[in-house]
Each structure stands twice: as C-alpha cells, then as structure tokens.
Length: 586
Image 1 (tube, rainbow, N blue to C red):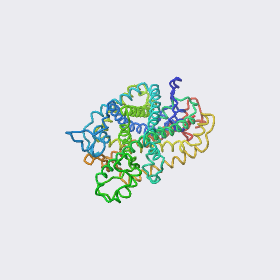
Image 2 (image 1 turned 135 degrees about the vertical axis):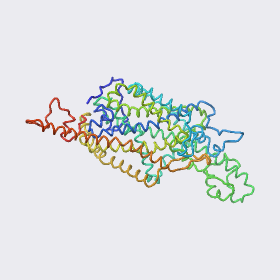
Image 3 (image 1 turned 60 degrees about the horizontal axis):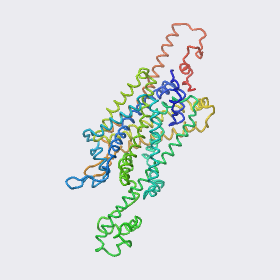
Image 4 (image 1 turned 60 degrees about the vertical axis):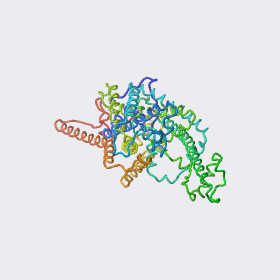
C-alpha cells in the first residue's frame, strides 16, 4: 500500500488533538481514516467512510453557525448595537420585542426571521444566504492548498481565541455579579445527573473538543514522524482542552452573572416602584422594613426575603426576582452565544468593541473546527482514490460548493430547527456509533495487546496495561450504555425541539413531526450504512478469491506448497489474511 511521504519539517503538524489509538493509527500507517481501517482489515473500511459522512453532516450545519457569527460580527460595528433596544413602529414598541427582550427579538426575528414550527418552511433569508456563501468561501480558501495552508491558518485561529478569552476574563471579573455567576457554576446540581440527555451532550462535547470520530486526528497525525510521541501529545492536548474548557466556562459564567445581576436589579426596582404606588392602601404588617422608596438602597436578598413572606399576598402581580432562575434563561444551545451573551455585552461600556471581539473569536473557533472537519473528509478520499489526489484543488472547491448548496436548507426561516435536528441527533448520534466501532475494532478485532505492541515498537517503551482494560471494557461499555439509553429514550419519549412562538413571544417545546423523524432516521442510517456495506463487500471478495484459488488448484498440480511461505512477490496483507489476522500497524 502506498504511504504518504514525510512533508518538510516546517510543514509538519503535531496533530495533538487526538486520542492515543487514532493518533497512533494515522501516524503509523500514514493514511486518512479510510486507508487506516482498510489497512488494518478490508472488512473495516466502512468505518472510514462513515467517519467521512459524519464529518460532512457536521460541516453542513456547523458552517451555518459561522454564517450567523458573520452576521452578528457585521452588525457589531455600530452604536448602539441593534439588539440593545426594541424597535419602535408608529410610536409603539413592537409587541414581540416588548414581551420578550431586545436580544431575543433580534435573534429570532431579525437574524433568523423564524417560523413557529419546523412544518412552516418559509422563504430563504437573503442575509444569512450571503453570510453562508462568505463562510464557505473562507473555508475553501483556507483549505485551498491542503494541509500545508490549513495548519498555518489553524495556528492563528487556535491562539487568537485564548487572547480574547483572557481579555473577557479580566473584564468579566471586574463586573458586578461575576462572583455570583462563578459560584453558580461550581454549585453542583445532583438532580440532573440522572438525565441521559445531559450525559449524551457531555459525550458529544468531548468528541467535538478532541476531534474523536471525525477522522481529522488520523488525517493530521499521518503527517507526523513515525516515532513521534503521540502518547505525550494525547495527554498534553487533553490537559490543554480541559483547562481551556474551564477558562471558557469561567468567562461565560462571569459575564452571565453580571447579566443576571443587572436583570435582577431592574426587576427589584420595577417591583419596588409598584409597591411605592400601592403602599398607601396596604396593611402595615405587609409593608417591608427597608426603604422601598429608594430602590438603589435595597439589596436583592432583602427583597427576596420580603417577597417570600408577603409578596404573594399583596395584590399587584409582584414577581420573584430570583438570581438562579435568571442565570438559567437562554443559556442552552445557540441561545447562549446569540441571546444571553449578546445581552450581557450590550450592558458593557464600549459594547460594540466587546461584541466585535466576541464574534471574531467565535468565527476563529468555528474556522479551526471546520478546517479539521474538512480535512477529515478530503484526506481520506484523496488517499483512497488517486484520481481525487491528482485533483485536490478541484475536489476542495467542489466539496465547498456542494456544502453551500445543501446548506441552503438551513437558511430558510425554519432553518434553525434543522440545525437543532442535526446538532442533537443526525450528526451527533452517528458520531457516537463511529467511535464505538473504532474502539471495538482496535481493542477486540485488532487486539489491544497487539496494539500496545505497536505503540512499544514506535515509542520504544510500553504503555501501562490499564489502557488495555480501558479500551476493551470501560470506554466501550460506557459508550454502548450511553447509546442504548439514548435509543430507548427516543423510542419511549419522541424527540422534541424548542420553537419560537411569535404570538406569545416565547419558546415552546414541540415534538418533531413524522416526516422530520423519518428524515432524522434516514440520515443516521445513511451515515452508518458504509460499515455493513464494506463488510459484506469484503466477505464477497474473499469468497470470490477463494473460489478462484480452488479452481486454479484443480487445474494445476502444486508440489511442496507452503501457505505461509514468504516470497518477494507475497503481499503482506494477503499473508495476514491466510493466517487469519489483520495487518500489523508497525
């Protein structure tokens, strides 16, 4: 099998975003995901193709998020920010905005112009279409010359977000309410640990953060020197990823704590003004001890204590100003970046600067993910098919054009619901299945002990035996349990999505219609189909070869034949097949 030549030293990438087994496989065999699994065993080639399909699904909807980031970035260069205040028509505040918030209205009505459900398709959003075209153009230019260019671009797109995160962290810690947000972050909520959805999202986040199952690890590590210490790389990147997650979470909760404190303060002020107007007709026992005529002197704790005691008794529809409930608003999915965080930034002095910096950071993070995802598609295909390898530039352009055309589905007024479908099910569930196949193939079919032998041959020392049991039992059983629990839950409780109701100006949880569930199931089946197809194809090929060999033996008399004879013309993969074992990595 033809292997990639080592690139020049300045063009090598340290493919550190990896798990040990995927890094080793790509580094040893020097192929993309399709070539690696076919080299191990032709029956496993379908895993590489499934990985490419999953990468394509992710690229389709992920680049739409980049388009949204471009849209917000373009709207950040104005003061005041367009999502700071509700629009006024005929001297009246728009009802949808007044009953929700300025940031929610801008997101759902101005950016998405969203429909009330996935059944209502609506027209294409021209602004998002243009932003999607720009996003795919940037990705195409970044991938134009392949790995050499994309890695150099990724250096900047990976380092720049750290600079922005540190700026946000320093600024965030200086804000009122930041400590409340960070305290909320570290306060455990044991009741949600039993929610399988939480664990599935956590697993998906790990896969996305480390690039597991995408094939990008195998593709990038195939450019490493063969004796590169991928064991060290795996631990280094996992540690950096953990610290990065903590840093980003600190920034998010510090800013969300400030946002919540501002909203709670406004809530207390509004209620105290209402109380001041009604105080003349109230029983003295219901009147609070604090000076409610001066809202600025009243703390949230004092108001909360009075509300629990008398707030529900007094007429006037007084509201509970709860910091914890306020922290939970709009902090899930796309709402975190495009509603909650944008609202917090609009409260900061110099809000356009912070907004532009934030969405520029999102754009860089998204681009680094897209480069890795696209490399997980292009590298395996060019390694497997020489015609595509000779036309890498045309393949890149063609892939981006196809991605843009199919991505137009997400630019409809109902497009956000399809993004949620892909993000929750159609792309993430196949990703978990691919990782299960990969882990099972390496630990059981190829053999964990044999795999450790290959690592020892490459690194010069043998990793601890604990890896064997992690690969064979702990990780595999955990993922199978997660996959099984998710499947059972989907069968018992129909999948749902959050829709935006224009009349009530609020989010509503709706069940996916029958046709959407059919599309969802077909996408998952399509992503997994290459695995059994490749297995059947390999089995049929083996039978065809065996039949031809038996026919040849019947026609000729062979003297002193040894099936295990190794001659200069013997193919090593064929020898291994005769012995009943797949090819070795080393």
